[in-house]
Image (cartoon, rainbow, N blue to C red; front, side):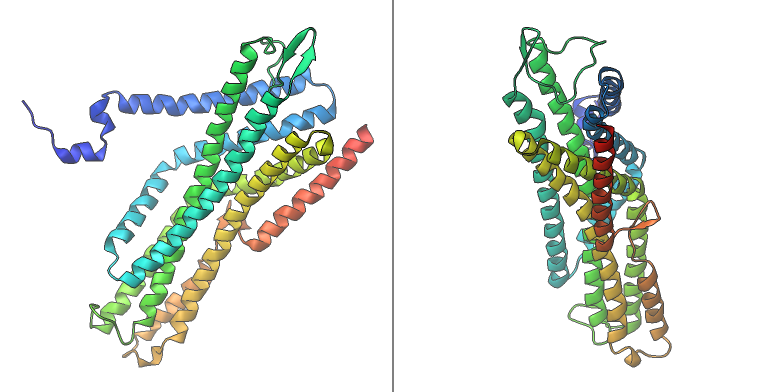
Amino acid sequence: MTSLNPSDILQNPNEHLNKYYKQDYNYSIELIRCVILLLITVCSIYTFIDLHDFKSRIRMTGSISFFIMGFIKYTSLLIKKTYTKSGIDLIKMDWKNVRYNEDRQIMLDYATFGRRLIIISALFMFGGSSMYRFIVPISTKIVADNITYRRLVYPIPSIMFDARQSPINELMIVIQGSLGMVVNTITVGACGIAAVFVMHICGQLEVLITWLKYLIDGRVNQNENIKERLAEIVKKHVQLLSFISLTENLLNEISIVEVFGCTLNMCLLGYYTLLDGISDPLRTMAWFTLLISFGFNIFIFCYIGELLTEQCRKVGEASYMINWYRLPGKEGLALKLIISMAASSGRFSAGKFIELSLSSFGDVIKASVTYLNMLRTVISRLS
């Protein structure tokens, strides 16, 4: 009888509970993608076959675009899962190698702040989505053709089946709401990965600044050789630059989808809010909560991009502000390279052509308002 190595269980305990674990895992991934694609297809068929006026089709465009965004982000995360694993491994290594309480406290502060960003994003996203997908349909009843039913968030095309009959109507509300929550989880997860990775990098850059402050005189339990302390700083900076590049490659597609998708959805949600107004306060409140949610999601991406740029700039400043003239020989040339790299490599971009910063967030808001005014003008002329 062969003995079981405990380390094998720790690597993946589910494999020993279910020998088909990997197969089931792959099936579940493909199932989620197929279901999202099915929902996009059903909504598109209903929009272009059952609906005939432009205003009603605009109402469905927001839901379709949200699911398309979720599908692209989910696919991108699956394709680049090795980047995610590498990033997590780097974070684990940094936490394992921390030597000073001061450094540990800096890392804890940034990790806590990143977690708070994720919690706020999840509260807005799931709060607005729950109101829109569950509370609004359940609280609204429609009577037509001697049938009393609740309006589905994502209506079923008439060529498929009649979803107004009970209990099909109630069942579809639950199924569609649950699928919406799955896509919300993908959105919050993508935002969470961005926040965790970038905030960890910012924390490590702050730790690097601390190391620079102690470069000349050293500190307790630190290497007494100034050349070795400088070598550790350069090595750490190179590792962080690699981590920044990895994070940008991981989030390239997700961030560009977030920028364009949030611009479109904030425009549409603003239109829905103005359209319903006080005539349907519950639905209007749901639209407004979702509007804040999308705005906060793109704000997180822009804010962490701004914060990363600022932290890289601080590294360059700290390299210059220390007593570098006390370094022996030509050791100060290493600081020159750190200053140069800090000034040129601290930018976080979406799709490698839109720099994510607070000014970019302002541009997204302005673009959404501009498109909203254009949409209102077009619809008023078509009416």
